[in-house]
Length: 494
Image (cartoon, rainbow, N blue to C red; front, side, top):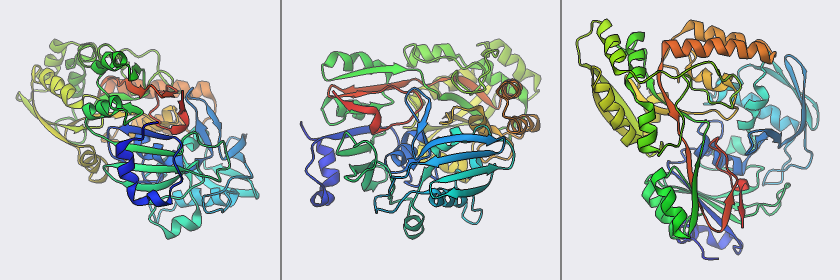
């Protein structure tokens, strides 16, 4: 097997400590890994995907989108506010220490420690306490019914208490998963090696390199040169070329990620619902899909949820492309036109974001807006979006949620959340009500009302789901999945 040249250079410093390589795997994603700490990020394709190689969750989501045992070999809902988990008894961290019930308890309590805030804490705040009932058994008690807890645990990775307290977990890692960290260089690559003493099924690859390559042309070139085995976020126009090359296979599948123009409703003049609705009528979603995705992708049905999420509203219909209606709504506001707005676009993270943003810019200007397009790197965008809480009036954004439950994704728009930029109390009350029942039919009914409210109030311009456009070398098979997880366990040698 021909070794990957960039992999060898990335590993040069640590080569003496590595075993003789039998098989290596090289993956490429479009944006940077920004942290190794799984508590500090909800970005699945990069940060959490890397974490999933090193750490073990209680449960794992498989490519068919079902939940399967991981650290927990079984679980049950004892009552509306109690979940009981039984752990495997043979799991160890790389340093030999056991993963037991006390470790799980520490991880949950650490996540909820308000003196040391964690990025992902909001999704676990319904937890009231953890009770260890045996060396490998525990119960999680919630303040109220929390039916999404089990799904949420698929993105909750278990860390070693002692190691975590003594190390910089943002830049170093030690877990109980199938791989160990060799090196991490933000903006370049994460290099992993298989654990020799892994308690589960032995990893198929001795080494895994996850490379950050923002340029799609470079990712494609790396695949065709034999330096990469699996790449993502390539232009659909490259599918035929790769399939005809004799060096790889490319394709596209529907994803769970919804793309939209996020509206900062707290920044004038976007507090006016008529302007937000005008944006939805102004954008020709079908034309964008046809022009940039070659027909791959589907127009969003006036919601950020995709079919496959619990709570998806089958009754909602997309905003029609109706520029005349958009112009009429703009005129109703009485504002002088053209209305100046900033449109912020992170480049490198989303497929053809720059080109799509330019098309949206022209369509908005045709109905009475004066758009200033501002491109920036994805880390810079995240800095504005989450840390500075200072997005412009408009921005291009895609979101999905690994639990595939409405509670997770819709909570990103809940009043009070740092992600929301929308202060809508009826929507917030609906989400809170949905969390207080475990009856699936009642939850679906509540979410139907919440998604209808969001459709009408339009805190985003609903667009489409971004297709997963992938390519793999002829030496591997990737088990297709549309939920953003990038995992070596889903890749197999032919």
